[in-house]
Amino acid sequence: MANKNESRRKKPVSQKRVAVVLASLVAMMTMGAAMLLAMEGGSLGTSVPGWAINQPDIAAMVVPAVPLQAQAWKFIIVYQSQDLTASADRLAGESLAGGQSSEPSKVRPKANFHFVIDGAQSGTGTMDGALEVGTSWQNQSAGAPFALWPNTRSHSYTPYTNAVGICLVADLNRKPISDMQHQTLLRLVRELQKQLDIPSDRVLFPWEVPARPNEPRPTPSPAEQDFAQSVKNALQ
Image (tube, rainbow, N blue to C red):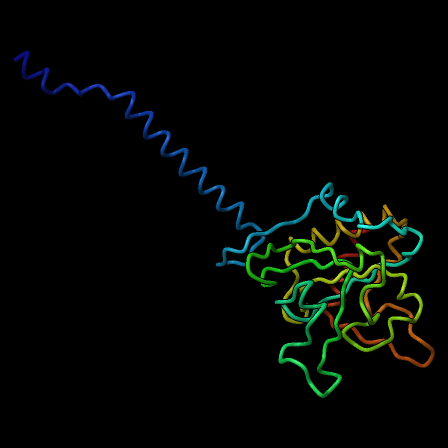
């Protein structure tokens, strides 16, 4: 009988086995958390990660290659690329989708923006919300060629030549900007305001820029108006 009872007793659980199981669970949970963090801010169903630049990094990236000409910049103009796949290089060297055209209205002028905030579709390995610094900022020279880019109003008309140009890789009439882009934009604008002493009422969108006499301003779409208002509210 004693032998029968002993055979029914549970064998002691191996401490080594417990340790191995716990270690495996922790490893799986860590990997899952890392994957979620990497995908945060990226497009749903894609492996494109999000990357909202934090304030210390923004401050370092705003330092140009030549001495900062703080007194030269009086305004900030926030543009959109009007497509979802642009990048700083493409904006500085390419036209609208479809290539060159004999019709000026279908050609996007080249623009070496001071800053470009990438989207999830900007290119291979692109981080959604990543900040690109243009050579125009590094050299402290005028950036976008037209104040109402990609429309063809002259960039030489005051106050455009003393405006810092920031371009979001976005088409607000097709898709809102991502949270990562929005965060990077606000952090960049705040840093520029601090370094250049630019008040919030001089953070403009192209349709807000004063027009020449007898020159009508463009009319923003509801999506553009909502976006601009959200930025202005955040900067208050």
